[in-house]
Length: 91
Ligand SMILES: [Zn+2]
Image (tube, rainbow, N blue to C red; front, side):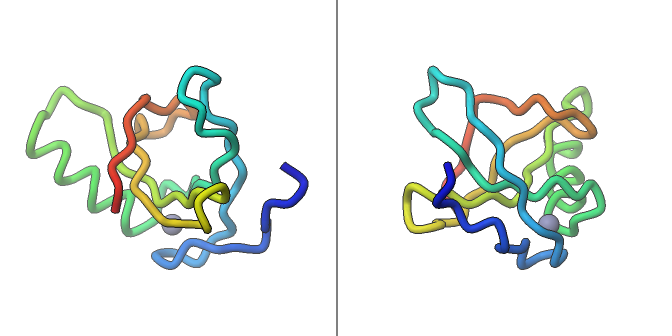
């Protein structure tokens, strides 16, 4: 993971993306994720999820895949937690 660009920032909130190692079974490797709970993308996605399912604490965080040309996607994550659901929506 020493070839990952750690200077990349989230286009929604401008915060630096942080490396996150996906669960081994996902074969994702290291992803860059926006951990900012005040990120506009995360906050608006949370509203959408809440409308869809009030019981859900899921939101979508901005993420990039260094192994795929830093392609951006939305990573489903539990609000306020570091655990991330094993779901990723291409975006
Ligand atoms: Zn962000």
